[in-house]
Length: 175
Image (cartoon, rainbow, N blue to C red; front, side, top):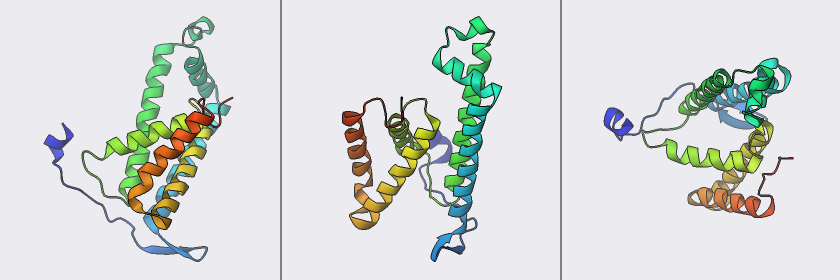
C-alpha cells in the first residue's frame, strides 16, 4: 500500500547537516540531535515504567494480564495505552532517523528485523536490556562496516544473534 501511495523512490531530508566537533571528531549536527532525542526518550520511558504508578500497571498487565483485573486494572485500557506508547516511540525513532538517512516505502522491513533481534538479545520485557543490546549491536555494525565490509553488517548482526541464542536463549539481560 505504501508503494502505491508514495512510490518506490528514495527520499532524504537535509536538515541540520552541518558538522560539529565533539571530542575531536566531526559529527553531523542532525545525528547529534537524533541521538539526544532518543536518549531522552529512552530515559523518560525507563523512568516512567519503573517509577510511576502508570508504569507499574503497564508492567503488571505485561506480566500477568489474567490477574491484573483482580487488583482493579482495566487491561483493555492499559493495552491501548501500550499500543499508543509503541506508536509514539516508533514515530520518535522514525523521525529521528529521517533527519540523516534516506528512506523509502519498503525500508521498514530491515529495521523491524533488527528491532526483533535487539528485543530478544536484550531480554523480552527488559527495556534497559534492549537499549544496551541496541547500542552494542550498533557499535558492532559500525566496526564491521569500517574495518571489514559494509555489506557484512547484516551478517554480523545475525551472527551475534545466533551466538546469543545459543549461549543465553532467554536474552542477555533477563533474570
